[in-house]
Amino acid sequence: MRILYGVNGEGMGHATRSEVVIGALLKEHDVRVMASGAAFKYLEPRLGHVSEIFGPSFAMDHGEIRRWATVRHTMSAATRELPGSVKRWMGVVDEWRPEVVVTDFEPLAGIYARTSYVPLVCVDNIHMIDRCRHDDEITAGAVEDYRIARAVTRAMVPTAGDYVITTFFKPPLARGRTVLVPPIVRPDIVAAQPVRGDHLLVYSSGSDELIEALRDCGVPSRVYGMRDGEEVGTTDGSIEYRARSVDGFLEDLVSARGVITGGGFSLLSEAVYLGKPVLSVPLGGQFEQLMNARYLQREGFGMCAPAINPGTLAAFLDELDSYHDRLEAYVQDGNEEAIATISERVTAAGADSRRDRARARREARRRPR
Image (cartoon, rainbow, N blue to C red; front, top):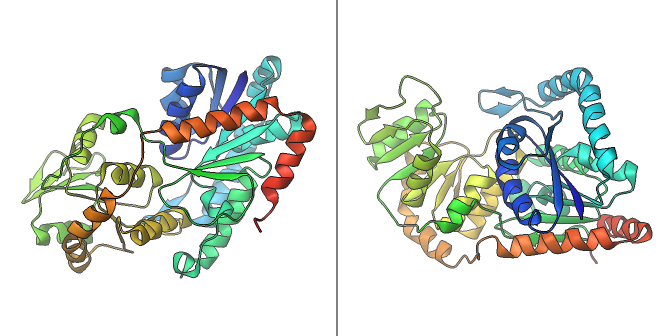
């Protein structure tokens, strides 16, 4: 079967997840990939048959997403880049004629599927926002951000026949033809043998408040994310500022006592898989991160906090044993369940008639009774 696979380029989670899924699909199918931004740079040397396309990006200011600046930036870039980008890959795709389109939150793949009457399967974590119900405890204080995020999510992939959502938490479904599967983690994570060490793994740009809290607690802390600042490669008491390193970061994650990070789904999922409690500080203005962090706390896998100070960090450390106990009850058999479900949905979609595909899209829009 010929499969076109679209990958969103904002952040690396889409790319690393898609690499695993595409690798599995390639064992039985002919798969070609379209990706933007960081995803293209990551996937192209690994997979081949990757076409670079236009993709949106976020405008940031002191750790918060600037909504309207993001819209202006994206629209301006789209005016310059989108026509040429679309023309290039449309020519390639039309000649190849895919039988199924899969998208990891990549909108142009969805547009191609809709205009060409090709079945579309959506595989990502972000559609959790739209396709599940979230109670007031999850949306509290962020209702406007939630509504905006839900509207954007719906607009990105509005007409898929199947939605496969990767997740470590399971709220009730809000729409049909939606299935929840465990997160897809990197093969190195699956192969790892976690141990409970003494240090905290910190993935952060290193605010003064966070660094002061780490100094006060005295727990060995390995800090990543300082980019190329002067602190990289130095120590400050119990704090080590580590340089960027995929292998080093993985080793420190596998042996960590706990993790301090934002609300990004990929690292939270890897931490949960490895049984590592997380103190999560979601990015301001990013409802998806807030949602992930609040569900993490609800599951008993860690704490969600708007910022880190000595009191917050002390409370997290005091509850580490409790978090570890809850994490021990979490069960996930590698990527087997997720890959099997995605493969099944893709194969079934490829066998559907046009009438079947239209019915699937209608059912995907319906709310469960």
